[in-house]
Image (cartoon, rainbow, N blue to C red):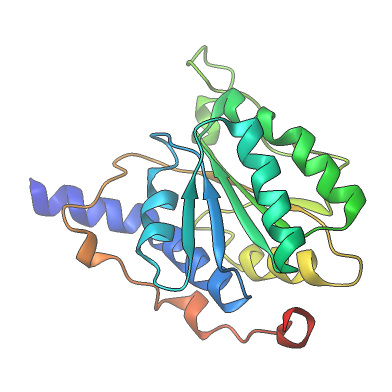
Length: 200
C-alpha cells in the first residue's frame, strides 16, 4: 500500500516539482510559504530545492508583504505560497501593491480539484483570476497545462515587471513515503532560461 500511495503522490506532484525547478532557473532564491495541507507538495518541493530558501510565515497577509519587501530589496522574483480557500484572499493587498510598484511576485495558490467547487466543501472557493485586475496575468497550472509555468515566469520578468498568479489544483495524496524520491529533472529542467540578463 505504501508503494502505491507514494507512486500516486509522485504522479500527482511531479509537475509541481518541475515548477519549483523552473522557478530556480528563472532566478528565484527565496520563497515565502504559509503552512497548510493542500499546499504541502509545494512546500515540500520548495523546501527540498537546494537553491531556494524557504521562509515560513503563518499569517498570509503578513507573508504577502514580507515577500514583496524581499523582492524589492533583492530585485529578484520571490515566490509566495498558500493553501486553498480564503487563505489566498489574504494575499490581495500585497499583490495589488506589487502590481503598482512593478515587483515580480510569483503567487502560487493551492486549490481543490475543479469538480469540488460549489459543492459545499469547506474552504473551497473560486480561486481562478482571484487577483484580477491587479496581476499581469492569472494561470491554471496542472498536469495538462505545464507550459504555462515558463510562460508565467517570463511574463513576470518581461517589460514592466509585476505579479503573476498560478492557481494549482492538487489532488490527494499529498505526501510521498520518502522525500528522497523528489526530483526536479523533468520537463522544466530542460527549459532554457530566457530572462537571465533581466535579473542579473
